[in-house]
Structures are given as structure tokens and as C-alpha cells.
Image 1 (cartoon, helix red, strand yellow):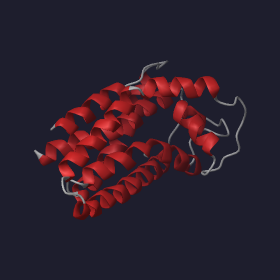
Image 2 (cartoon, rainbow, N blue to C red):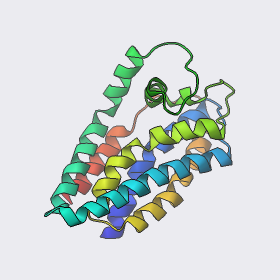
Image 3 (spheres, rainbow, N blue to C red):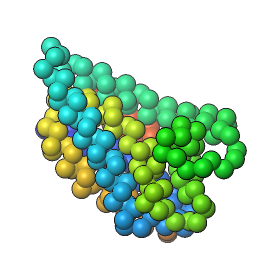
Length: 201
């Protein structure tokens, strides 16, 4: 049962990367292997830190199962409305070039709403430097999910599986994207439903 929970948790955390990779592939934007590794490392590192923070909290929480369920349920609910949030950001974002900075909140919000904005120089090639910012945005969900999962699951198992699965999702997303000319869908609600199911379990 733990393995099934870990597998679905990691798969749903990788779903955003999968959809975004399809979008990149369809737009003929290249993500080289070294940039995929950077995205994977950033995401796995953030997840690892949040997992151990959740693991540490076990000692101070009377009912970690309930606390974990609340976190995952909240994450699931937010993912269901993720598409609406992104549309609001797109409508209100500043329409101008923003110089690359990992600490620029405007840039982070721009990528969150439209991941293709990570291609700062419009070279249709995601460099390792650009991949850092993209990796941070893709890993935002990992913070909450990691704390929730760390309360009840083995952090090592989750971190290792995430490190292995995430690049596979990105690789196949790019392959699928190259086969189509346009992508205009959001699967955030799918991961949201699965997070809620995991919370109830």
C-alpha cells in the first residue's frame, strides 16, 4: 500500500512536467539532457528537503496521518483550481521582457502561467541556467506534498522514485509534443483529484 501511495504521489508531482514538456515539444523548443537533469535535480532537492521537514515534524504532531491528509487535500483542491489561477496571472502579467533572475517573483509568476516563458532569450533552447528557474516553478507543489508525505511515508523511497520518474515524464512529454502541432489543455485537475484520493486513503 505504501508503494502504491508513493508511486501515485510522485507520478502526480511529475504530471505538470509531463504536460509542460508536451507543450515544449509541440513548440519545437529543445530541452537538452543536461537541462532535464538540472530540472530533475532542482525538483528532487526541493522535494527531499520538504520530505525530511515533514519527517522531522512527526515527533511533534499527535496525529500525523490527519495532518498529512489535510495538507494533501488542500494541495489537491488548489490543483483543481490551478487552471483558473494561471488564467488570472496571464491576464494581469506585465507584457515585457524580464531579465533572468532566479529571485524575480515577476519572472516566476510568468513561467507559472506560461512555462514557455522560461526560454528567456527566445532561442527555442532551454539552457541549464533557464532550467533552474523552470525546475523551481515545477517543484512548487513538492514543498507542500513533501511535508505531507514525509509525515507518513519513507522520505528516501519518495525522493528516489521522484528522481527516477521525473526525467522519464519529461522525456516522453517532449517526444509526444513533437508529434503534435499544438497543445491547449491543462491536466492539473487530474493530479488534484488524485491528491484528494491519497488524502482520504
